[in-house]
Length: 294
Image 1 (cartoon, one colour):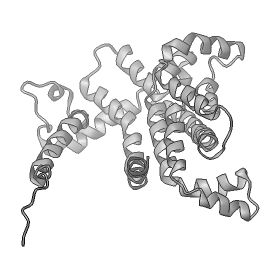
Image 2 (cartoon, helix red, strand yellow):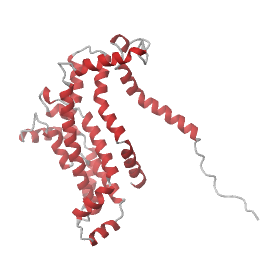
Image 3 (tube, one colour):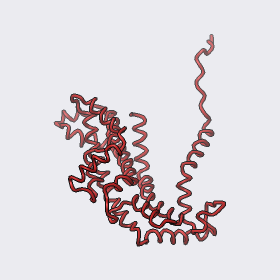
């Protein structure tokens, strides 16, 4: 005898085609400012703000020549030294990202794998720092760095990262990832004579490469686009980063042609996009691991 199906109906899922269309529309909307910036950077000045607006320059075959002229004019502008600003930004980003990854990995290991008193309270305090806006601590930091004689140097921009300053999100992400690693691995390592130092370097770090790459990419993006911190602690034009250089380029010329301004903006954004595409696979693995296991 066949019994009637009395189970509640399962929720209806959106058709895959409809989901794909919605995702495509959202992707186009999010990418439109970036696409418009790039295409404006390869137009002559009179077409950059033409009405009605057009996406491609006219004639389109001359786009490589327009692009070469615009980017060359920006890169070789004697009043704004973009090559020097690129070098400064790379130095600061390399030191700051390295420090943040190392310090966050160590602190997260302490919260995830080491049992100690008040661990939960301290972790809650670390998470609470995420809600403290930078203007609140701006004045005390300036006083501290001035007393150390660091104003006008790169040190305020990378030394705090080696002490996990501002790394609440990085610590949280790495701690959540570490907690998904089976503790049986720790016990097996202890049987082989490893302490916390050996477990961290031989077990935890090799298994955490996607999470570490994700933290590095997030923090690199933050450092690369940071404007307010270099603006406060750097006082000489030769020390400027790309974010400050872009603002200087926009303000000092007054009526800066939009095609050149978009070319400068593309030069600033391009390294971040290139790094993302080079590490896309590892980054997606890290995000997926956090989403599934976190």
